[in-house]
Image (cartoon, rainbow, N blue to C red):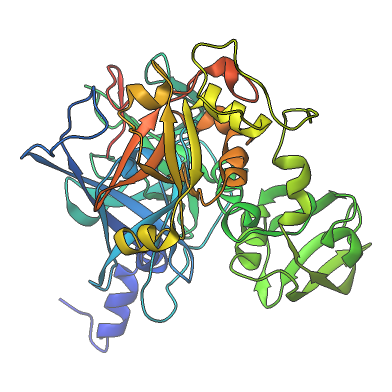
Length: 479
């Protein structure tokens, strides 16, 4: 019964229902995507062979971090898949491509090509997250797309071991329900800001889930978006993220590399980068994505804070080739520039350069030119490749069924058009974190792939294999 003269309108009723949680979901959910994957069951002892009849369907979640279609998710959601399909909140479905990944920290970047600009997730900080505060998980739980659950922050700084090869550090523990399919999705605060990326659940427990703090994840995302890897350009800035609250998230310049575009632009230690072109910058991930896709020689306007005053600068991007002289080779120069191998029974019949020698020792192949038209006819995504001329007995290549006559067209996330491309991968500072080294070859009219277990002692750092195991006992990844 209403008092005389008292009237409840539709607007006031809606206001009562539109709680902080509802507003948070409404703000964030357009930038959350559902990921569906397909894998082919294969003989684990071979890299090739006829695909088994059984197809394995997987599911996960992702977060749009750039309006051009770049999406962050967990590495275990997207690795070793035959196909990836992404569904947006508006129902649009698109094929996705794996761009880069980090097995050690279980993060990956995928990309879709959708018309128009996509909504980017509002990023918060995990620096000020509080025990007991309300958090929200959104994900593809058991395939039920955009499922929303609510809980609290149960603990901070959890270290969780999945198995002897995979562990997580400094996780957020939450009792918001996280289920298979939630992996890679956002953990939100009541302002609708991403404060974590859901990654694991405790097997056999109830409402014990874990998320990677967003501040830790964004540092890794910046490396996954590194323009040297993805755009073959170079800026030379060394900076750090400084975050205390959502209102205080800054990218602070630490130094600039010698003869770099950042140095030439006038960036100095202590500067705060505020904008790149028209894009606001709050951390290294923003910096990299603002420069991603630009060309060498492009001039980009910067806004920085120096001693509290706004200062405009112009950054001219350089080609990554300016740094390749030191990055491409760790084998010292030998004169003459060939190595005689007459006394080595495992050697190929011909002499090799130092780079060819290292490829032979690490991978177990000798490579030569391959016609680019053959490569592009079979696999247009590749620009070219290298023909396998010989395979060393009992080498990683032979064990993974690479044969003489195959055309090697890719290692990890890079194409292998020439020997320098191969050396870039073998000399990469993060080689040990790639896990078994994924390779792509063309054989007859097929593009095939597999994983090379390179000998740790022959890699640049000699680090052990860090391949991620997908089976685990006490802790599960809810993909």
